[in-house]
Image (cartoon, rainbow, N blue to C red; front, top):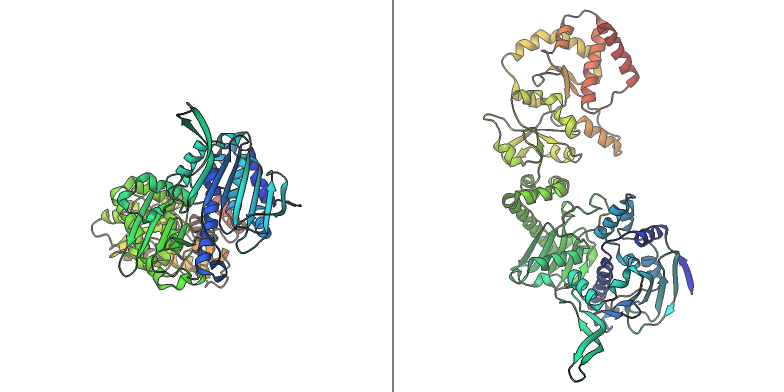
Length: 621
């Protein structure tokens, strides 16, 4: 017998599970049955497509056997199985599972973390919530040797050779005190119906059964085996036959999420390409949604045969929150997982599916706006990512995303912003490059407040990337308020005279600032502030430049801002008549530096800035 230690992360997880006050312990059975179903899916695929496996006798089934007296439950399958190395890799370490992400999300709050376990699911390790000893006997398909894995969920595990008549895995749970309630056949049936009724393989339960014997006039105990799930691919049935609960049960089975989904979209396509799709929108964003190695949530089947659930090519990245199924009648069963990306049939399915999902979301946004806002709270940012890459659906996505604005509380649509435009307004104005608060208080909005014009607030970091490449919403221009050209919309007849009056001061400020700015101009967009900075049309914002540099973009062009000054501001008026070159020098730099600070750009030399500020303050005190 070989003794091995758990990986550190596994020890952390097991201690958390065993010692947490967990309110949904029944999840253990869902996880074990899901693992068995995955093992059957894998062997079914190989049995149909790979020569070495075609000769194997494959009779897919999952068996639960209950020893009620001794409180022992076994969960067996006839799937792909595991050899010694697989047992060490899958049950002794955390490899490609979400468990590391789960551990990273723990807060130290026992109540919250216990609930988090239920939302995240912890696969095989959930068995230790209800058992003080777990044994796994497994034989890999195509191999003769079976192996036995044993652990109490504490220090480590033991491995030794074993025997098993056919390929597959048997998990034996010795229930602990908390798990004793599950040594009950009625309870097991209830859990299977709740979570695993639509597993596509038959699930059998062998347990003691009490029946009334009419001749003997007493209850007689017998040992009986019966199927306890429907074992049908639910998504292939007509929608008219399905109830809301059927959809919810399947969602929980395929996603491991104990909560109900927000929406689902069930489509059967016929014609040149025949396929069925069933997509779910979760009620909460997956924990790994913003991680590069996120786990895709859509499973690919061909004629009800599971092919893969780890391909990021099935749906575009911005819809990675979707959970569900694509089942094609036209793809070959032995389609290579590596060439799925180039497959024309799958490409057509993906294109049509994306359009269907977006169309359904658009209908919900119109018919059920309150429900749609729940979706926006969770998935507005991923949907914005589609604006950057999915050009074919950009107009639809612009209708679906929601934004903040200076006119309304909460979220609003671009369609509503457009409907509220003033007569003669030359476009939809927006501001981005900071937090919600900093953007709303930006000097760049002063002219818009004065004229009661709505401005869209784009405060997501991704907005800088996304909206810089979008210049129209339908036939309406989108105009960034920090671009120099936007001021042309507000020029009036007095501007030339004002510019002439302040021209000498402008020239002096230009001379002082030199190469630090591209230009110094009179502003028509300021009302209360003395200065602001803007950029020319095709230049990235200063915030974006900072982001690009932080990402390692060292070869950026040297982009300088344009400084705009308010000729009606008291400071500027006083500077017009000033003859003290030292004062004009300090004031010129301060006008630029305060404008930079408001935009979230740090001053280049804080010590010099403070010295300059102190000199000006000493004159005023």
